[in-house]
Structures are given as structure tokens and as C-alpha cells.
Image (cartoon, rainbow, N blue to C red; front, side, top):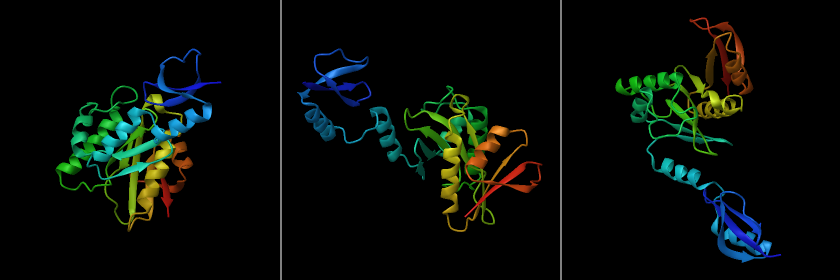
Length: 229
């Protein structure tokens, strides 16, 4: 049977039996032959299996001056620049695609913390707010970051996930990676995350990321979870 190489609007390739109806959103290319010939051709021209929008976003991020980009199985954790923080703090999308449409109120608060630190001259690259970008579609599904640079060997992390992205393990995935990165920094041996007692979803995220609940609470009465090297 003769096969054809087909392509969709996201610049992804596939092999399809020639002469049969095409799936929605796909069109023929000029390449036909045996199934193996088509697979070999795809291997030559499609060296990056990600959809075109994701490849473009990755190239754009590579050109940014953001200090840190961490990668997990399903997410990019890209540190937000203070200039982006000013826009996000004002509920501006900052040129990004957000799950839920716009930055959440909690993410806006985190962005204002970033801006205040930058304006005060105490912002330390790497220890600010990270945007959680889903690699499958480049949407920002939430934000996560540090409350400031490490102090006495300890750094504290806070996070927020957009409502449409909850319940899928993104927060746990991102928290585990950001905490891992922090613990590889010189002089940092502890990462802290705090929650209210009734915030069961956040408590579960923190516990699944490997943190342990401490018996004592902080000065504000919050539960304290700790992860060490």
C-alpha cells in the first residue's frame, strides 16, 4: 500500500494511507511511498517533535534575558522579569496566554512582591517569581516563586495554580523541581512552604513534593513544611 506524509496546522507530521480521507486539520504534503519511506522522510525533516507554537515559544524564551529556565516533564518554569511583573501586577497578560484568561489575583500579588523587591534594589535573580508554562500549548497555568533570597540557609516558596489547571499534578511537579534547584544553590540547605490548616489541596501538593510537616507553626500561625538536602 502506498502511504503519504501529511501535516497539520501545528506543523506536526504523520504517515497516512494514500487515497483515503484525511483527518480534520491535516493536509497532504508532496511525499509519498512505502510506510517506511514516509517515516524516514519525516525523520529527516521533523527533528523536533514539539508542535510549532511550542518550538516558537521555546526559541522566544531562549532569546529572553530571564535568568533561569527550569524544565520538567510537562512544564517550563521561567523566571519572570521585573518588567513583566509590572504588567502582571496590573492584571495584564504581558503577551502570554493564561489558563483562565488573565493572571489570578494571587499571581498579581506575587508580581507586586517582585516589583517591590526590584524597586528597592533587593531582587536577586533566580529568587523571584516563576511562570509555570505548560509545554503542550505554552499556556501559563500558574506561578510559583520565592518570598525573597535565602536567609540563614533557608528559602521559602509560595505558589498559585489557575483554576482550570488544578487537579492535574502541575503544582507538585513544579514545586519539586523548584525546591530541587534551590537546594543545589550554595549555602541553601532548607526549603520552606507554609499553608493554612484548612487549605487541604495545597497541603497535599507540598506533601507529594516531599516536604515534611513540622510540629511548630510560624509567627502567623501557619503550618510549616520543610524539605532539606
